[in-house]
Length: 294
Ligand SMILES: [Fe+2]
Ligand SMILES: [Fe+2]
Image 1 (spheres, rainbow, N blue to C red):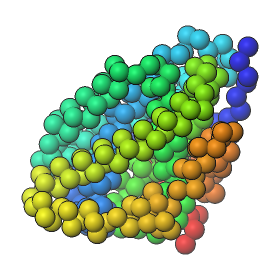
Image 2 (image 1 turned 135 degrees about the vertical axis):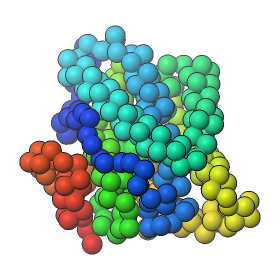
Image 3 (image 1 turned 45 degrees about the vertical axis):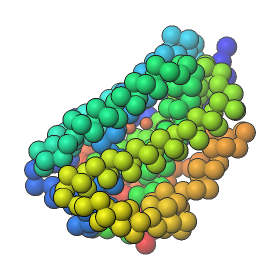
């Protein structure tokens, strides 16, 4: 009998949300800033295929789960990730309509995922998924705990990111628990998969950002300068979107780590309450930000 995992939040699959994303979303939707918009575009571009990979990795062990609570969590995790993939696919289609080489970029990324699935064991693929889920669980902290992070962001894009980040917090322990309790992945493989995932995220995000900026007409020299100039925005130890999360990232390497040790962001309940009351992801996002730290 597997040890019963504890889930700190209820996993609620919310379906067919409408964010009002259409061709009127500005090309540079974050502060009118080409680099920052494209960097976030690059990350979100990978979500649909990335999430299908997460689902496949967890599904490989589904038959071996005998705990009903874990079975239910896996089912709801798959439903949430499926919805995320659909929403981000719609946005990727808008990027393609704006002239971005989306098919080329998705093909490149998908080939990497397929290679990983082919070369590594089911256990290591699941460990990679658990590592990636630790990153997505931190998205809410990265963008929505403080108000300044999303200032100047298109409200529709912001609402989509908020919904996704909230649900990632809700299911943050699912892949990890299947990895630990069912796949029996030990510390070495878990830590190794995280190191590999850090490298993958860096290579993928910079490669796609660079290609998108090239498609926007930026020269190689201009792109190099933009990458350099934006290093503090991404990696700065205090205010960098990822740099500020370093302590949470390092926590993953503690032998006794569990995702539920990291609390949900303080304003999570504000999003939840507003969404339950209004059914509007836009109003829920407003409530989230109204309660964010200034
Ligand atoms: Fe997701
Ligand atoms: Fe996820």
